[in-house]
Image (cartoon, rainbow, N blue to C red; front, top):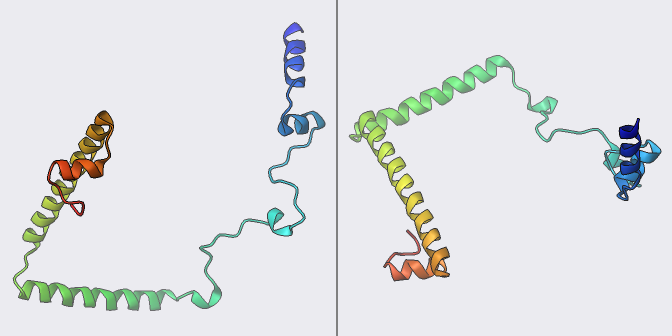
Amino acid sequence: MDTEQSEETHCSHVSTPEGNDLKRGALKRTPSSQFKRVHSNFKSPLQVTESAKVSPAEEVAELQRRREQLDTEIAQLEADGCRVEELEHHIDMLHEYNDIKDIGQSLLGRIATVRGATTRDLYSHFGLELDD
């Protein structure tokens, strides 16, 4: 019983508005407001209107048109001499470049912190372009 009494005494000293609501037994999730919109139901911004709904057959037809368009673009790129393997190699190289650049940016930030300078100052100190 002593623990129950000490818990009650501890809670009775709460001076926050939430604490006062707890004493009265009223829990509110939204603030009191004269505006009805505060207390209205949630409406998702991604709701689809009736006019925007498309039948499955129309959706399939649109996807087939899109596939044909992409096939045409692929054929054009292959005619221009591009190969899938070459593209994958370039993508891998871009990922590696971005990883190295991120590490470099991190190091520049750490050096700037230690020196008490800005990264902009370090760019000019190390002969780097700000656009890099």
